[in-house]
Picture 1 (cartoon, one colour):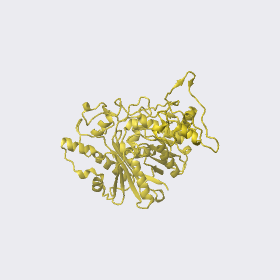
Picture 2 (cartoon, rainbow, N blue to C red):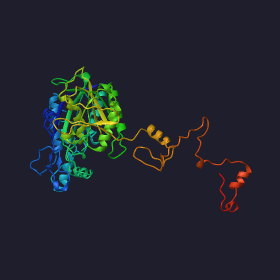
Picture 3 (cartoon, rainbow, N blue to C red):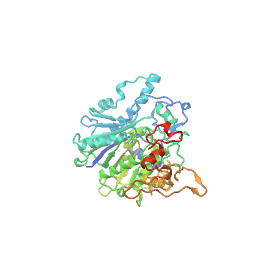
Picture 4 (cartoon, one colour):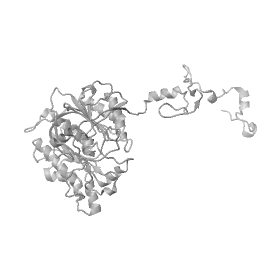
Length: 471
């Protein structure tokens, strides 16, 4: 089953609407600017991708994230012909921080704030009459998880239409936390760039209206794009490090659910946080899925212009190509891979925008993404990776099974004049046990003479100082 998107709305640092945001991306306009709402003396980094809607420089106010979400949902609902009545429409919101910034301002500066407003459902009920609202809070996977839940509601017949949204704002505490994570303060987000320094946050909201394809777009609405498959997994094995294996698994499952092959994909929207761990893991995963294809898919990352918008990010990535590519039966599908734990991917119908070509190459290669300029830059570079288990095992056997002789992946061991010791691998005889090295071989237990020599069954005094306990 596939689903159609009939309404879209968005707010970001580079625009107040879907059209303005896409225009900024095409023209290379970045939302990067000096910090507006915080005291810059407290941080090493001095810039962020903020929405400039504060009353004055250095003055902040609560409920900004709620305000952006309201605008995005209103725009998507109007685009889909739903109006302001969402009383029968489930609304699913993905977020990382909700209204944490409002809590900071209330606790530190004493700015009045009602705890009931922490839940976006309060605003959605008051503004749209929505009674079925859900919040998904699992970092930058959040809005794609909301998309998966919305698709499930449609498949199960629990709803005919759902609104899927994502929103997040920068908070002083999280900005300070990230400011201390990197050796150098980031000056911008540089996905897949050798000069990357780390991640910078962004702000905004996005919303889409999703319906079953069999039901059609509804009166007064049109089809923007088609969602053909959604896949999620949960590989939270580490607080922050991504895992290439599970990224690839999510992408492959999305392709399976969509009924497409890697060769059918035209465009990959990368997570592209501009951190070494993400870039390495994501490039390895892409090599696993798309390696060896010629031509390979287009690939691009947009955080160089929007920053990392956290819970909003996943939903933002997959709807953007639809702003320039209408649906149609002859279109080839695209894949959105957005990486964080949990990993997730979605595939949908659309054509790639012009001018964004990346080649994936072999599983050990990577390509650059946009660095925020009007013309994308690209280059190839090797990605260091741990060799596969089979390769590591063969390297270990080549050194005779000796653990003190390290392999060629960055370790050294004892050397002899002729180089590292490379003894033949010891193989087990057919039908027998493996032969042990001479220094580990045990004497056979043979008769009374052997027991007498090795003291089997005798006490320490009877064996003497040089005696050995029998084995």
